Length: 319
Ligand code: SER
Image (cartoon, rainbow, N blue to C red; front, side, top):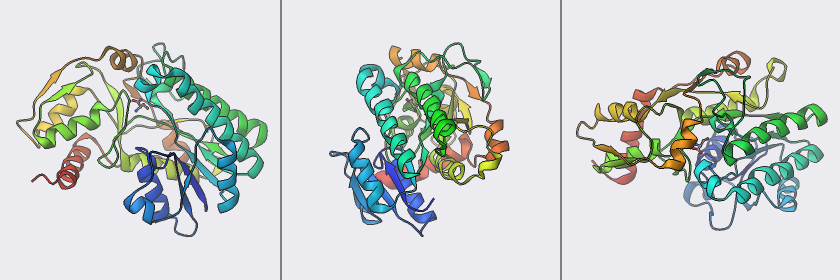
């Protein structure tokens, strides 16, 4: 990994991953690929090159790969689960036609590719607890359909053409830098904003809805480490279960109340998000990632909650 293109560099993961790659791998260049309307700003813009890069425009991607002698592509362009239910054809276009563009360019120009999968790649027939690495994947959301297909197509390009494709199944990701948009797990970010502002939080998921979650620093670590893992130890490729914690809305609210005792929450369940969440695992088993490339998370619910509250107070200027 020397010269890297991040497609979707201004999104929830991309905005932080681009900065980490520039910081951790200073020998090469990390290009921030963005779409018009989501231009990079501030440090993201100042710390390295940025290029217009629509994942659905193969020519545009190929030109960037040539210009910067790119050897690794992080393909992060996607519509999250609730948005994908509203715009299924657009989700298909970005997630599938975009992916095939990236994989074809990677095949021709010898790039490694990371395209994230998700807890959304599982479905109602999947074992809910300790969800195994290799198990039933029959998702019922468009987001999930595209994520399973992403896993299969990425493995296909590896088996058939030798493209170095690798990825992880991300849980819900929590961060204080860039907001997610249109995901089922977004509540676990929004709840911290409400708590720090002293507002009541209206929770769209019902009590007892357990989902895997992860703090962004751990997600970034996983995205970098898997691409640096020794190839000969990888039995799996697309995609590895990884998790840090599993909680329901009551659990995260209780963790927040340890720091902000008067935090208030009430429920107004969103049927679309609830039915998506009900089809996802409670907690995945990530033993294969631990064994094959040394995955281990650093944050749990308590340490993440403390860090989120401290940093959001700074960001929002609240004492
Ligand atoms: N966070 C995503 C979503 O909720 C799942 O990967 O859509």
